[in-house]
Length: 444
Ligand code: 5AD
Ligand code: SF4
Image 1 (cartoon, protein in one colour):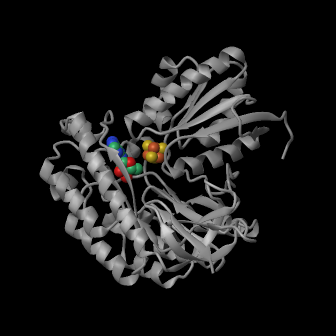
Image 2: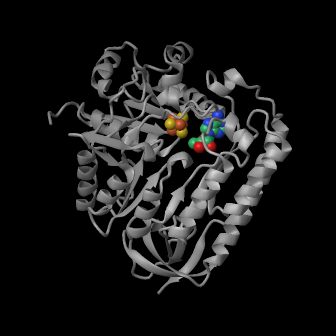
């Protein structure tokens, strides 16, 4: 690599795991241009904000952050500011017009153009590239690992989404679905193992849509994940996210029979009501979803289950909301991400439906959902008392340096006294007590 001036880049990432993974690709592309990623905004020559558009409050947070950065730029006029990711893609030129502090706008498929864009910015002009691509997967770019514990890493395996759930901006901000060359995925996994990593999470907006065609042969997601798991028995493999419409028996059986594929499935339900699911264009019914859960529990009895839920989608009645609560109870989720519906400009729902559930009703439904989930998590954790789990140590417990913290295969967090164990160890831990969020135990 040619050595250029060493400049500092600070990347701040909002939103999903996919964005974290993209920031690591951006870090790698910028390293080639002589930019070192630093972990403080204060001494940066350039600040990138990798943004999320999924809900209005995500965008509001970023606008607020831009006001703070404006002050930093006043103190240091040479500071450059770039907006990456979904908000860059959604707002395009409008964001340059509205935010005087911004020098650079780059959409999720345009990061390879950063070296050119940066030259423009360095010469004092503003730059923008928001072209979406049908084939960009950044396949051979070796990500820099940002804020990593050197134990777990993300591997992006596919990009984009074509499901067009009516509430969602992602198909518009991240474009068409495309899968990454499996050879480059396996190389990345091998490289991580060689560096001492113990866990990878295969990422995609809809991992089950992964498919790679080569010489008339095709590779499916279950086949890919089995290959990744075969890289090393010491490597834990996770994945996110699956769409319920295409979580196949083959995938469930592959997880069941492969010891180092973690027994944890994130399966966003969004709503437990068929009429709401239809308005959301989720393409499955409550019954279909229940059948998938039954199949998961049949083949993987100890499977950790988590979900995403939206409260107060357009036209949602009290009865429809109750169906969501009933389904949550039936599944008994270990964990859930729970949101109030937030109307997004230019989505199908915004064009077709009225955002008619009053804010206070959305709030009270969300409160009920959160309270129920709290109960379900506590119930599920209590059932684990007395059981022993293999835990991969990720770091110290938040509360005390005398305790270590790590996850079991089901993706539950366990905390236990440190003794002589260290980060990266696999430790057998017997659960002695719990809260709704954490299992507490002792190494055995
Ligand atoms: N409003 C609220 N939540 C949303 N999600 C996606 N779009 C919206 C929206 N407009 C949630 C879904 C999705 C998760 C990533 O974010 O639950 O699974
Ligand atoms: Fe990720 Fe979706 Fe947010 Fe984009 S809009 S950052 S894809 S969660």
